[in-house]
Picture 1 (cartoon, one colour):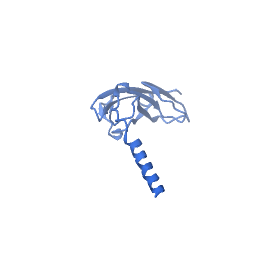
Picture 2 (picture 1 turned 45 degrees about the vertical axis):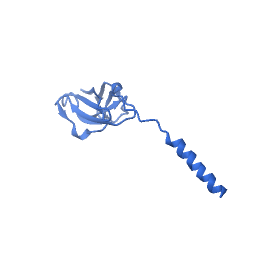
Picture 3 (picture 1 turned 90 degrees about the vertical axis):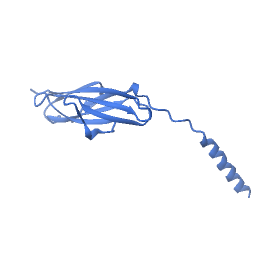
Picture 4 (picture 1 turned 180 degrees about the vertical axis):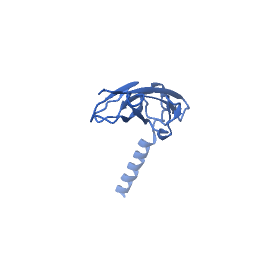
Length: 142
């Protein structure tokens, strides 16, 4: 009987300790930012707001992807809408993800630019913030 009482009291103490949980805090979208990198065969490092890379033989393909990521968000419940600002089209393949990859072609074979904007919405409060970044992809061989 003494063991059952100890187990019962332990369970009550555990329930009381776990019963008080701080309320969830809504995310703050005002600190949102964006980083990007152009994917090559090298170790690509994301940089804030603007990124660039150079194509060289055996270093990448002329057509690659620029990868954009939203940063600076605390834990929360967010929605993401991505827009290609060169075409003004929604990037449906990136819907509700905090990162997005879009095609980019070198400046010799294409325009060498990708400009992307994300609208970040806190789904608990409705607050939103737009962030954007620009990626450049240069032909470094010609």
